[in-house]
Amino acid sequence: MSIGHFENNIERYGLKLRLIEPDDAHFVLKLRTDPVLSRFLSKTDGSLKNQVDWIERYKERELLGEEYYFVVMNSQNESLGTTRLSELSGDCFELGSWLFSRDSPQGSSIIADVITKEIGFDTLGFDMCKFNVRKNNRSVLKYHLNFLPKVVDETDLDIFFTLSKENFNINKVKFLKFYNHGN
Image 1 (tube, rainbow, N blue to C red):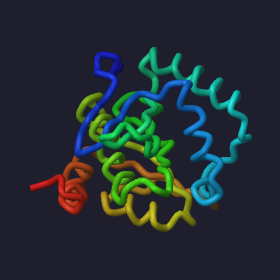
Image 2 (tube, rainbow, N blue to C red; image 1 turned 120 degrees about the vertical axis):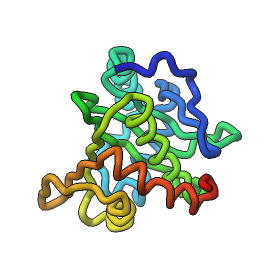
Image 3 (cartoon, helix red, strand yellow; image 1 turned 90 degrees about the vertical axis):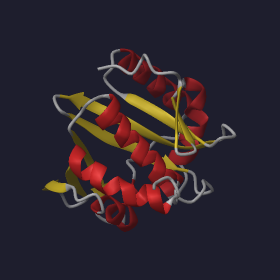
């Protein structure tokens, strides 16, 4: 499955998602090395060259339709955060790389997550989404539980979930309304 036919910017609910480019490596590295933002992430070495190399390898997977990594921007084209669709297979996609700067507007990460799931479910046609959340990341865990996902596995560190398209569509409305994007 490929979204190569999309225009570079996907615009919804006051945000833009565009496919990441190697030039975004500095922004990604800034997010991933922020001590507050990275406390629930796997460690990164902090090398700009390694981040550029990783994005260049990712771009090959993007061309094959294997994953899509987005930079989320506001209407002034300022980068706010990142989000990614990966592990695209069968009827399921995986969410990840959901990381936003501390000064991004309130709700932008939530709205970006809704848009990302809409792309996975509606644009790419998947029926199921999978993701994992660190147990200690209580605010993110609480947010995701609002969609009524199913717990499929658990480790000492993480809880693994699946979310159906149906539960997503039923529950996304409350977030869109809360952030003034719903009826």
